[in-house]
Image (cartoon, rainbow, N blue to C red; front, side):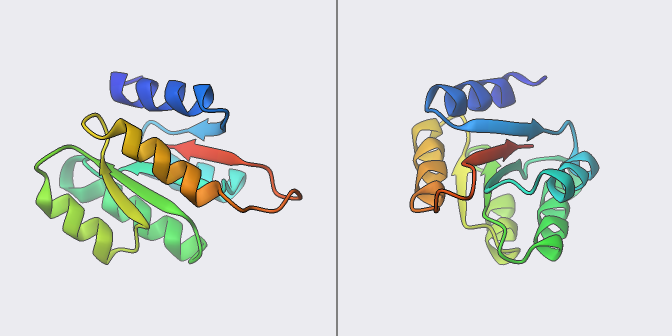
Length: 123
């Protein structure tokens, strides 16, 4: 597993969130989203050929109300713009703004009623 993903997963768990799944690539991310239906989906949009953006679009086709947070690397303006245009709730530079990423997950989960489990999916 890539180090950045491991760091994000560990931080989510330490913050008290249940990570219900993770995916090694875009196709797996969409497939796991369909099955797991997480409350929040953090997806790496910095994959080659904008594959992460494509996966995010497909997730939003499955569920237009999906709470997707796009994670990218600092300075990747093309990914930021594409993620926003594709429906991301927020875009964070994963390693440089990890605290912000954790805050975004908390904000997306805040206020969910008790019947719904608080879960997060990282891809």
